[in-house]
Image (cartoon, rainbow, N blue to C red; front, side, top):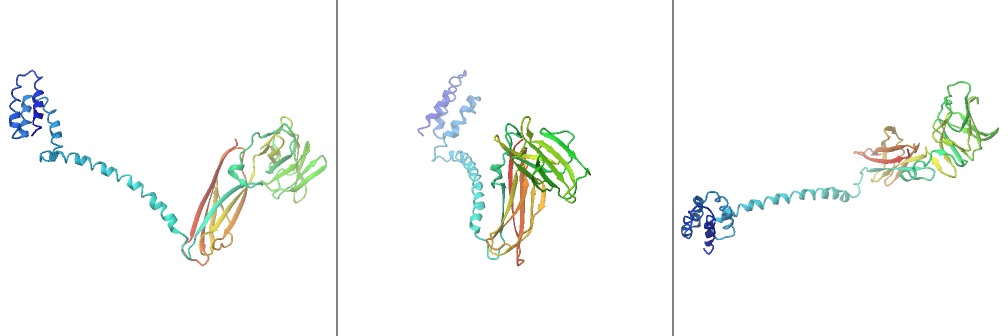
Length: 361
């Protein structure tokens, strides 16, 4: 009741209007005493334009009066606004339990049950001869040209090619003799300083042979292993004087893969060793059923190896030479499937991937 003067503010609204109908709202506060409801429609006919503005605050006034039943419907109006954000609260809740079940089973599984098959696979890649991790050791060369000082070592890879029509830098001569088709058997390669043989050995395609402290003029002979007949002879200026020797160039059937001198130790085809560790983490003896890997899209079935006892490990290895003087990524993915030796089902399996990128181009 003390707030009845509030409608008197309503008559003040028509006061600035041009109409003399101000007296019309004057009697409206009188009926406002018995009922505030008629007080509201009274100004409605007086000024139609501001009517919508007036009723808007009217429900706001009764809203704080808990005793009056009329504002009760005004209270439920904001109530739905309150529950609206309530569903917004549960929305992030599902995000919290999701990681919880994922993390919980891992530590709670514990050791495999008695008689269970369980195996893990670990791939390692190591650069030889230091056996450093491939990601750290294989970085390419600062310069692929041996120049500036004489090399302390030159290494060549046998490819089985004929002499090139264009001589690479540093090549003095290259001559193919006899049958232009190279023998299927592994040839014998010999390095000479003049007529003095420095070293000799058998080669297969892809094998690398190195000559330490080569003479200024290095002569190389390749002979048939079966008959001993010479089929290629190459002579190289091994001083690395300008323009020098370029790694990856072909000198007949031999490709220069690396050099070492005072300026650099450059190896564009370093040897690497892939090791596959098969670990029996279960409680029964296992026999590998299948074991394969895919290296840059090239698959290979690896030997299964012997049976593996509980907590036992076997290592299976492969040797490669990587192209370290190129921009390339090597991806090796291997999968193993094993079964308990007594045939108890189910089998167990594991997969591992080793990947690294060389920026050597």
